[in-house]
Amino acid sequence: MKKVIYLLGIMLLFAGVAKAQDTKVQNGPEIEFEKVVHDYGEVPYNGNGECEFRFTNTGNEPLLVQKPKSSCGCTIPSWPKEPILPGETEVIKVTYRTNRVGNINKTVTVTSNAISNPTVVLRITGRVLEQPTEAMPEKKDDAGSPVNKQ
Image (tube, rainbow, N blue to C red; front, side, top):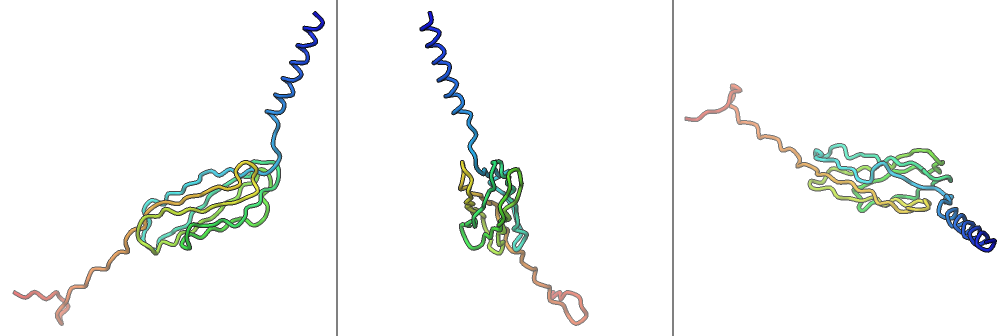
């Protein structure tokens, strides 16, 4: 009987150690974005191409964001250069140059010292509308009224 109780005690000890390993909290910074895709919808030619990606350091050490890399020169990111302390929220601002007509499908790759997801890809989508064309003015006679030839 003593051997059975002794074996049960050892088994419970190992089970407790294994459970403690599963629930151990990892130390380090973590980055969590509110959204990773921004849809501009339809944007007028030369319209506002700015958007923000808000994120929080959900870890327990300072978060460092390295220079984000955009997929092309028409997409310009700006980011916080200072460490983001645990619990703080910051933004990565992205400006898309809307002087090109057509669909928008660009990415910004954010690299940080986060433990579980050190690289996050942000995406912008939408469509830049055609530049409006001005109507040709009607030809007028000397009196200022339209010329009607019949």
